Length: 492
Image 1 (tube, helix red, strand yellow):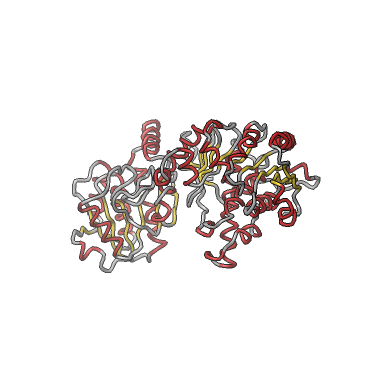
Image 2 (cartoon, helix red, strand yellow; image 1 turned 60 degrees about the vertical axis):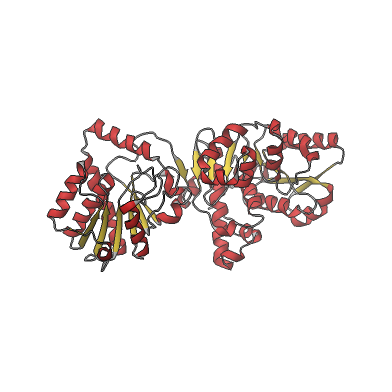
């Protein structure tokens, strides 16, 4: 499992490691340069001309060192530098690069002629202001050249913290990041412009330093997290899922949630519903038990409370409607001892009645940016602009774990945070969120890990997106439906 690190944390980690073990920083720079040259070899032949865009700091030093190695190996290294006043290790590597035959070119009209690859070593993760002047001009020219660009640690112009583009940024075919991925590579515009991400070691042991970051689950992690079913398993082994969902005209949302829970392994699944949609649900989800609620509110609350005592986990909200008459039932779910997943219309009702907050610490809310904005009383653009801040604030206000949906879904619990990189635009259709809620419900209590709630959220998001990608191969991205995704769900 990958884990990100913030730029300031990486800087401190490097300094502490080098100071503790008396390791010269230029050795780490040499290791970084080897990773860059390896990347160049993936995109160009051994004798190709490569343009190195070098800044005056450590990022530029990586670039100068890589230019020297490429030149020594038989290629041609052409260097554009923002300043000839490189400092520290960068100055040493600049001198070495020039001594080994690398050439300096300052004319942008000539810089990219005959070149095969561009290496962006202008600015690293310390950049905090929009690019301008010569830096912006050369990045713009590099993007317009149509040559493949390889970024050193992070594309110049991309915030290593937030993933925002600071004025202009290089659009890369590959980014070679060092030791651990920087958080901004996985947020906002990062995934769109960083290309293939390669994590390259730079002498610091992977286990060094206990700095938590965003966790990133990968397909190879799933088998260890979701154990296979033992031969003597029975329905009770995989728990009872209670789903309160659906309303007149929105029965499909309840059906999709329940079917996804069953598909993802829920042992026994019960749909709590208004009596109007009972016949529809029994046809759409014959594998689930249905409990129609009486019209009397007091009786409905009593039935709900009893059902919750038998449940191992619950879901509320998919297609539920935002009828204020549901508030007493929301209060019953709020008092449940089992973990409750709050989704869709239930979140809208919570945003209108903040007196129902906080929820229990073992509950999970699953808002999209619009629902998150309503819960936080801010604009949707504010949530999208700084999703990490929104994630933290949602945790604080609701007291629950948070699954903040989006192109890069973010997750947060009391003890950790994660991001899902497996998303696809095929999920941008009605019903997708209902499926995710059902998958998550099935996985709660089943997965292993130090923070089982965070692990369940990660696995659910990954499996959900993987199912959509599988469906894309069958029918194409535009044509994928929730039904296609449902039939493509696989746990490993």
